[in-house]
Length: 321
Image 1: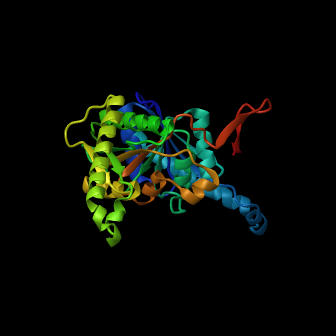
Image 2: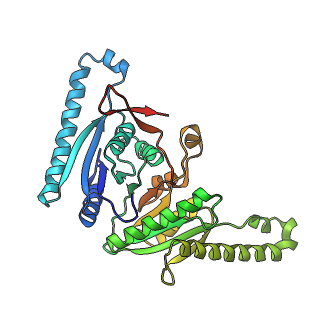
Image 3: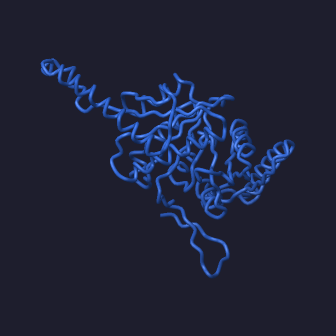
């Protein structure tokens, strides 16, 4: 997604897509973007093809029902004179959707937090692997005057995370301008060793530890101000926030208390076994938070699902790393 335009939106609709479609329509109309609605049907596993005597007929019926549903959705959207396309993709949803994005260069993917019948697993995989920003539609309804929160790291550990701060802020500011929203910025912070105030054997150091906590907060505030200046963003008083604690804990509390409509944050470029074992803050929040999330990727991110063009085929075939 460019920080100045969204020209093509892809929306993945599987089960109940009512709120997702409202978001897709709002963004397409507001940004004069093309909209495409897709679903995906995964082929039957080999053993099911063997044990089910009419497996081919079953797949045909499922595809027919899904295609009919897509057509009904498009029909409703076109009543409002919104130009929209639809396609029933073939293959595992995450692979089929990312292939579609790579082929047609969509700028934004919209998914529900748990619209795939598997507790949101597909949505989480798309968050992790999708090459473009992903809007995860939450259970909270968007308000007319949207409150948009950019969650940044005032003390990034490396250059890549510092650059990701810029992308988060640019994306959040773009959404605020485009949707007439109110922009806020949040940094979650912790002071190293603060927990030492509790054990009695460290009682004599409480004064020094308390001073250390105050200095750490001021340091984060100073660095957050530098991050905003670097991004050329100026916010009114009361729109820049520091929250003490782990990001995964303080961000949901802040969003609920401040009635945030859209949380904009970055996702780390982690895939494979480390992603399965560790996950990241964006995925954790997408499973639990009520508001919508816009997740952006670091510069240079390459999806593990990619197109490989060959001389024999005009299209591409998926290759998964």
